Image (cartoon, rainbow, N blue to C red; front, side, top):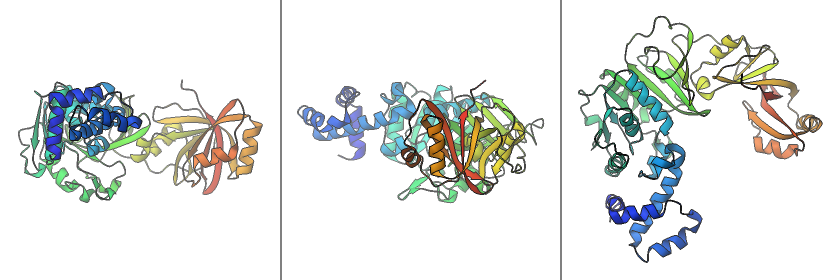
Length: 416
């Protein structure tokens, strides 16, 4: 039995009942569970069900338990799928631009197609792998969205998307040796995806967050998205009211929600979820000045850093960089923003483990948060060497100040 036949067996009543029975199983007891189940079911079906149960447990982090335990997965599908909260945000952006139908190219197991359909958008979901397409089809049915999602097994380069309002392309960015960093080595290549986007009235391309800015096509607005403080992806947006919002061009602007300023070719945007807060500009500011550490330190969100919008944080806070190569902003006055976490700095030390240990002992610090930027020291190694005791908490930053290895000690500033 091949992989496709095995998967189809899971969709049959016996397979579904077997999967339902494994929802809460303990992987540490897999041998005993497998032995018991093989008394009543074919060994191949039991192995497939156990593998699917493990994938569902892993998928809970991305899709939530309610959906994950109804859906079906492949190992690559769990690894490469968009987090549901990010997919839902992007689907709402499509909907806010009046999109009613999307050709989802390289759809994988269907995570983005499901979010689009839940936003009331019809979807043509295309993937060239037969098993992956079958899994996407099963997921649409499992979540009651089959009427809005047509799944097609085909090479995306052969698909005619001219009848669709919009195109979404999620090229494969992993190969046999792991992640692919060259956009032209994506499958399909970024240049092909850009060409497909430019033919559509509206389009979005999912790319790696670490893509060099010089590789960004000038026709697109580039957006970096973080969820809960972790950068999850980058997206290139094409179309809409091309030319941008003249009132916003040339300055930084903060927006909230998914109804936002018109797309501006060449603009960059950092979006933070779940707050739905976006910082964007059509003309990034020059590099901020570098100066001494002030009373406050601001740690920009990772999406802000990836979007090269740290200068906007420095300008808004009236601050400066602590080092020209380090994305920490410092200032003398308090500044509150969803785009940066604020800390009050109490001590600045040259890098010296003994001095830090003595300071933490004097302050009775028993809980230490370690952050690093521009340092090779591992946080766990530092905590182990500090031998912490006490009732107080502190944050230490291992970084560079004006090129010199430095330790900054402080505490988070409570949100207003």
